[in-house]
Length: 114
Image (cartoon, rainbow, N blue to C red; front, top):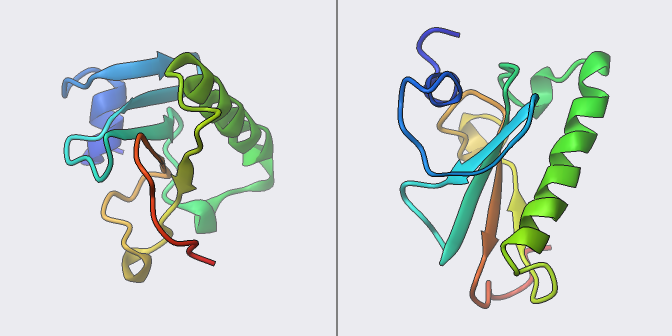
């Protein structure tokens, strides 16, 4: 998608602080962090949101969560805990229409959400 911010980051048109990359996934630090550790994990394939996932994307989503686990181990916050967030749609707070997961860590993240 030509005007997608995350697609431009994936293509290297916009710089990012990469923390993980493989053939299908890119992870980079958020430019407006909401916690001491705030990493965005995105598929390189443009998918608008969870609501737009297709059957063929199931393995990719599994790989994203495997990458999240690997990042938590490599960055040293796996054992202290972290939060994974996905906003789906404008009313849920999704501002970039490219599937992405936020990893938040590095502080007490407060009360249980649910």
